[in-house]
Image (cartoon, rainbow, N blue to C red; front, top):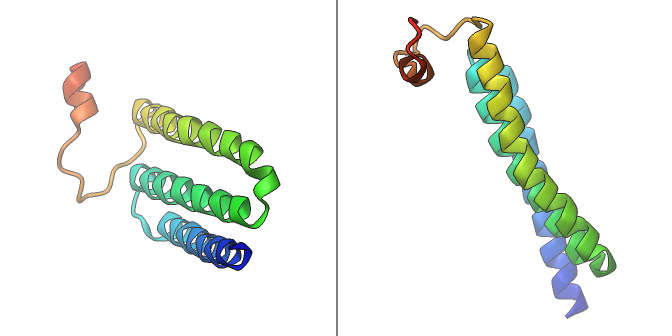
Length: 112
């Protein structure tokens, strides 16, 4: 049973590292700030949670602490990205030419 947890922990750590790497790649490749926020937040949240799960499998004594850290990240990461996106929108950050719909401007009655 102990070796199964070790294997599962290793797989989760590798998967988490892969998502974190893809999130970093998304930050470099995306065309504007709004897409970068999206790529960074989704991939890093999942990557961090997978890494915490892997660490919990490898060190079961740390499970409760890692669960609390994971819950904190799960609640704060999407919220902070939404706040950053709204601030970027309000300051007039340039959008990608491929962006055709601005729902926030429509909802608030702003002109794009």
